[in-house]
Amino acid sequence: MPKPSDQFQGETIMRGLVLGGGGLTGIAWETGLLHGLAETGLDLPGTADHILGTSAGATVGGQLASGLPLPELHLRQTDPARQNHEIVPPLETVGQILETWGALTAEITDPVELRRRVGRLALDADTVPAAERRAVIVGRLPAHDWPARPLTLVAVDADSGEPRTFDRHSGVPLIDAVAASCAIPGIWPTVEIDGHRYMDGGIRSNTNADLMTGQQAVLIIAPMTDHHLAGELETLRATGAVLALTPDEDALAAFGLNPLDPAVRAPAAEAGRAQAHRIADQVRELWA
Image (cartoon, rainbow, N blue to C red; front, side, top):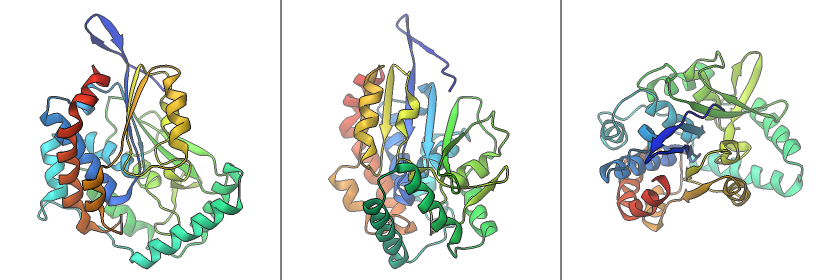
């Protein structure tokens, strides 16, 4: 990954912002958190040297790429008149998929083989039509061009189980890269790019923060965590400072039971905004 630098008090500081997965709740909470931090004077998207997005984080990264100010992006989560149309999978379907993933995780210890098995589930699933799902992603993104600032999105090849990263040099439209990174296996259709079928980047890791090595400061925003996070933090600490932000109790209460329910967007965004004001000093210490 290219790492443009920023100058701060005469020193070269490279800051990485990692946006993790977490469904519609994750998109809303991350947006609210970033907006709230900006209200305290911390413009993370504007000062990050590199942004890495996975699943929900890919959506947020794509929305940030539009250049719309954070207050406007926050309103797109909280104002019903500005909210994007979303397809709502039944709660029982989400529960069944999570149960299946849990069983596969208990059965298969090799991470690549696990991703291949999940990939087969994704390829065989009876989902909404790909065009219908793509229209949702189109509606989520205020602009459809890659930004000049470095933005990297993560997806997983459903056949090989191998991760792939997309950026403005990949020759892949931003809409397709976001759709691939958000293609939850068993819920949404895989996305075809360059003859390969891709699924949610969160199948490798909810944050994929280990791909952000080499930065002097990395902030991870993780609506949902998994067992990979501890190892990723250790990897990043070998080269710089790192801080992981996860939802506090109020935010978790706002998330509800179904992370893909559009009704959670407003409360999750407001919870993120409120949490940001409580943790701003902690973030400022890392970012400065």
